Amino acid sequence: MTDKYRFAVLGTPIEHSLSPDIHRIFAEGCGFEWEKDFEYVKIETDKPQLKDTVESLKSVGFSGFNCTMPLKDEIVKYADEKSEQSEFLQVCNTIKINKKDDKFVLSGYTTDGDGMVAGIRYNGVEVTGKNILVFGAGGTTKSVVLSLIRNKANKIIVLNRSKENLDLIHDLFGDPTILFDLLNLENIEKYIKTFDIDILINTSRLGMKGFEEYPSFDPEYNFIKLMKPGSAVVDSVYNPLKTNMIIAAENNNLKTVDGFWMLVYQGVLAFEIWTGKKVPDEYIEKAHGIIKR
Image 1 (tube, helix red, strand yellow):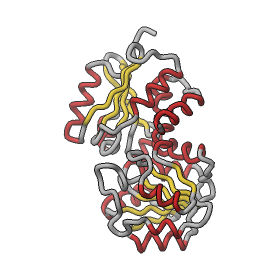
Image 2: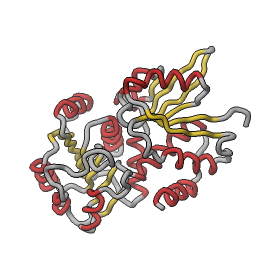
Image 3: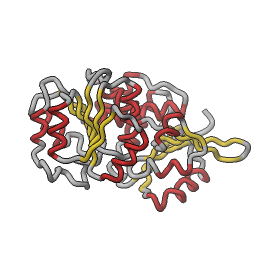
């Protein structure tokens, strides 16, 4: 190989990101020598700095980058091409940088939703035909909801604290079979009971280190006790790996899927978009083991 692959993850806060560790393992599995052939770094970037950061990455020869919170909506402004999913959702978490006719072309993709579904299925939980309650209304939520629709979930209910963001995602999908409502204890309990929820998915920052750790409406997550035996609780937050919601689910003998799984599988999809190489299953397992430890 003559050209070095250089990638980054952009967002804030970014210090906690495990993406470089994961992509190092993927690179190893695909025969790349770390630092010599392949590099992946963290760059602290908020919305006001995003344009300058993107220009800098292009100028120094980066091949692509990931965007995490709060940039998944913002980065769409700078994508020259978008996948069908990204075009519909107007969110990207993966950008591939190409050069065509001496001009840089940024191609945008979203891998969060398909990564989440792959991680859920890896853990023995099926989404097809299931009733699913989702917390959040940001870029990750949009991608996850679209993937749940494409994988034929039976019923999807989206709850969010901000009515403004809730209205935006409602208008995006415009699907009468999807319910949208405010995230509060009354609604959580109502929808768990009314729709016999099979899977609860948190796609918000709830429980993330550095943000509000407990929901003020139910600091003990007692609503988890309302979920039926055999149901599952899934989190997109991975710092901490065991959020209080995941712990509450474990204490109630429910199936759990921690935030690492969406992280690793959306990373697999991004890596394959960038390099055209398939990550061997054993290296996905290896990434899981290392990060867990």
